[in-house]
Amino acid sequence: MARPIAARVLEPEPIAAEERVADFGGGPPAPPRAEPVIGNAQLGVMMFIGAEVMFFAGLIGTFLVLRLSSDVWPPLSQPRLPVVVTGFNTAVLLASGLTMHAALQGIRSNHTAQLVKWLGVTGLLGFVFLAIQGYEWVRLIQFGLTMTSGLYGSTFYALIGLHGLHVLGGLVWVGVVHSKARRHRYSSGSMTGVEVCSMYWTFVVALWPVLYGLVYLY
Amino acid sequence: LNRFVALGCVLFGTHSAFGAENERIVEAFNWTVVFLMGMPYVILAGVAGWIFYHYSRSRRKKVADERGSSLRLVKKESLEDE
Image (tube, rainbow over all chains, first blue to last red; front, side):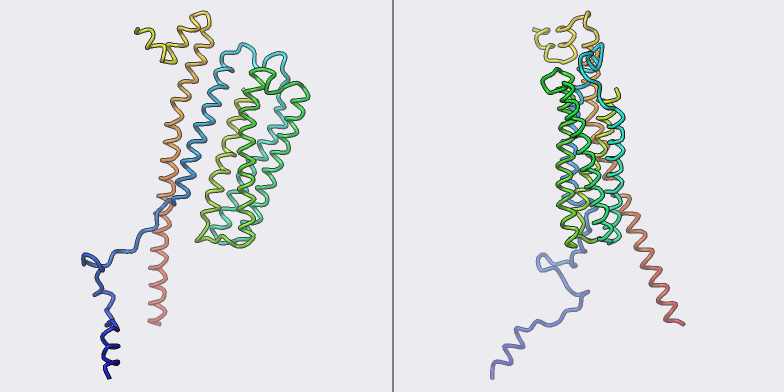
């Protein structure tokens, strides 16, 4: 007969929400934690981009020393760079920045189809950029501009080549995000993966006009 | 000794190494040093601007959400009164 008594003792009495106190130390219940304005992933990627900016600043510094100290640039024996084709390529890469922005807007308004579509277009434009760069490089090598042909060649391939590697890395990243977006892994409440990818791609796109202006036009 | 220590400085070093006859190289180094010195400040300004943009956007969104919820409440109450 003691069974119902024990059951009654173990069952906690219901407490009204306003009477509840914290388990340790007393006091009113803690207010709900405010959501941070900037997530840890975004902050981490921003720090990574800061390091990348310094990396490219070092390379641009090297280029500036060589460029400013030369009387004739490019050296007379070296081929001229294809300014017009690369100008078109610049437009292609800038357009990919816009499509990436459209993809981000799509997932912000919870339109997965829009995200998938614009990410696909971004990847395609990135691929076109790399393909044109590759074609240019083949032609330049045929004309005699190589890494070992002089300071002009080595600085050109170091700066433009490393940017190309960054575009390739970004392209792989866009591909991964695109594949996950197709499987409906993102929503307006969970889109950190898209945001950090967009940040990196924006950096890669924004860097290119600086390099184009310095290496091709200056 | 002073001269030896001062060679550690890029500006003094380039002047000593290249001399007045290579003013162009010295100037190139000087401009590059200025560029590299300025880059951390550019990054700092960029990150600060980015944080400020996100912070102000989140505040605007919060205010808009609060206005929206109070408007919905007023609308609900007026419908209940009717």
